[in-house]
Every structure is written in C-alpha cells, then in structure tokens.
Image (cartoon, rainbow, N blue to C red; front, side, top):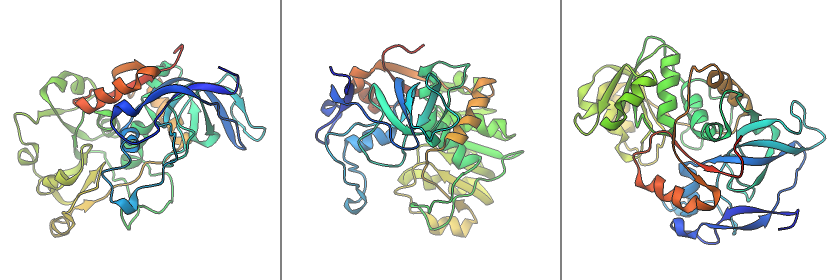
Length: 340
C-alpha cells in the first residue's frame, strides 16, 4: 500500500451488509479549514445503513445521488496527523472526535484509516474516555443535544416548515421511548441532567442499565403498553419514531410536545393540533462546539456512553448485521488499529 492509499470499507452498489468491502482507497488530502485525522475508532449509526441501502425508505425524489465507490460513516475519534495553514485551535497530535460533514453524501467518510474533516466539525476528545467510547458519541449525542438542549444553527428545517425549539426540562415529566439505544440513552441522561423526571421505555433486560443512567422509572414495553400507562406527560422523546409515533399523543398534556427522532411516516398532525400538542423534529448537524460541551459532561461523569459491541474495521459487515438484529444497548463501534 502506497503512502497515498489507505484501507477503507467501501461499497460499489447498494444492498445488504454483504456489499461492504474492506479494500484500498485513496487517502484524503487536507483542504482549507480542514484537519486530517488518523482514525482510531468509528461509531456506526442508522444513516450508515440507509446510505448502504440506497435510501430505499425515502421517496425516490428525496434520494440523493451517491457516487460509487462510497465510504459510509460520519463518527470518528482519532489523532490529527495534518492540518491546513488556516486552522486555529488544533495541533498535530491532538486527539479529537467528531461527526464529519453531516448531513452530506460525499466520498470522504468515516469507515477508513484516515478522514479529512472541517475543523469546525471536531472537538478535542474528552481525556477521560478512550477512542472507542468517544467515537460512539457524536451523532447520537448531538442528536439528543440538538433536540433537547440547543439546536445551534439556523439552517432551514427539511423536515418541517418551522424551526425546531427545545423545551424547558426542569421539573417536567419526560418519557423517552427506545431509551436503551444510541440516542435514547443520551436523551435519558441529558433530560435528567436538566432536572426532568425521566420515564425510560425499553425491554426489561435494560432495566438496571437505565436506572444506572438516572431514569426515575423504567417501563418494559413487552409487559406494559407505555402510551396507555401515562397521562399528562410534558414531553415524549420517541427515539424509535416512524409511523407509530403518533400513538403517544393522547398521553401528552395540552401544551406538551412530542419529539420523534425519526419523523418520517408520522400522519397525526391533525390529532396533535386538536390535542394542543406540538410535534417537532430536526435534522442533526455537525457541530464541534456542541461536542466540546458534551465532552465536558463526559469528562466529569455527568453523562456516559455505553458500548453495545465493537468490531474491527474489516468486519464492518458483521457490525451492520449486529445493528440489524436490534435490541442494542448503547452504540456499536468499529476499531481501527490502536485505540489508545
């Protein structure tokens, strides 16, 4: 392998996890405002398999053009190997983490030994956690942060006509559905950190885990129908989302809110209006400054990230198969060389 190539996971056609290939790829170069990261770990997220599948769940007119071969992924933790002359605040050798160029569909992605990244997309890695745990944070942590704490940008919302607005959490009753997953376990912790009474919904095997994260109540959805068990909730964060998210509307008080993390397929806007419930979502976006804030909470132990499982980069196919099996506790991570 020459100095201008690297190992990466690419796919040359859309399909199931079998299309992922571990192979040589061009090593990215650093452009203005960018850093080159030697990747130590990669966090995997639903958009990775949406991309691999060709965004099959989207209407055809919404599907972006994807040039082949494509490298999936956005979340990395690693060490800066080079940086552009105009980059300030970072130095070669800094350990950093970030969600790179999201949302975008270019070919400089994360399932690789190296990734070039806008310096504004990364932050110094929290010193108290290793690269594996740091790589598991960016997309899930930023999603929870931008839904619940601070949107942090003024980009037009592609999902709705109005700007998403987080709601005050102190003293509120907040239910998190899908609480044990990537976004869910951050939402539980951030809501608790901001003073909410948190009700976590997941399968029973996650009970102890969620209570350790600070959940005040844990509901096993295999035994209890959560939308029938509660009334007058201030906020429901549905980390599962999709067409079924509207079932939570009757459990929310007038003036309350429903935040579906995956809002596509929701058809209950008329019912929500009648009930006086705000339904709002947003598209998570890269934000190094917000990752720095999250990093401080990770460093002091206010929040933590859970690892469901880890796989070597060359075993990305197995990681995607694990994701497809469901019932994930925390995040799935790919390791790249040394993770010290």
